[in-house]
Image (tube, rainbow, N blue to C red; front, side, top):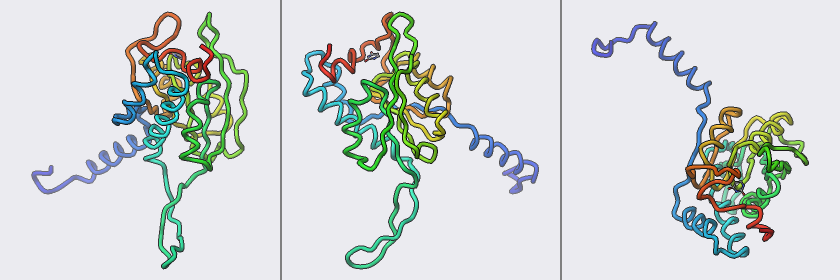
Amino acid sequence: MAALGYTAPGLICVKLARKIVRARTHDPKIEVVKHPLVAASLAILRAKTTASADFRRALQEISVLLLGQASAGWETVPHQVETPLQSCMAEILARPLVLVPILRAGLGMLDGMLALLPQAAIGHIGVYRDEKTLRPATYFCRLPGTISEAQVVLVDPMLATGNSACQAATLLKSSGATRIQFICLVACPPGVRQLHSQHPDIDIITAAIDPELNDSGYIVPGLGDAGDRYFGTG
Ligand code: URA
């Protein structure tokens, strides 16, 4: 058709329909953030010799970098401001922000993120992993009232089995959240599959995808128990 310099109206309709279907179908996405500072912080976090104080600092630093990447596609709206010289158009974030750490290890990522987004509201979801079944059980859920309009960032350092993240995402959605991203440090294929099979609309932003889970549900090579290392309870 193109060779004839002519596109049949029917073909235009088919092309348009394909475009609309693509626009409506959310491709589940996992973004592995490739940045030298992310890599350097992750190396500190992985090393078993890293002391708690350094682990905490590296976790805060990497969390800021991951959030910076996750926020790159957030919607903005035009906003007029007065500079000291004249008025000009600027842009501000279109939605309120809600950060939701999954207790307890997710708390370790919160401090760094709040330095970048001090205006964010904070929700908390407490999910513990039953060590026998490796299934999640919710023991705490407190979410801000703005959750349904908000850009929600769910955080947990490790996406291991994916069960806790799935449970937390289900709680967020049942409270009205529709725009959810999940940020972690290290993911593994079973966790990614599990989260995307139940919540295909949630984008995952991570510093690494490690190859496997061991029989105790730990990511290998991973970095060990993130909560224990952050809180010094190992
Ligand atoms: N939780 C952790 O803290 N580490 C893992 O490797 C898996 C789950």
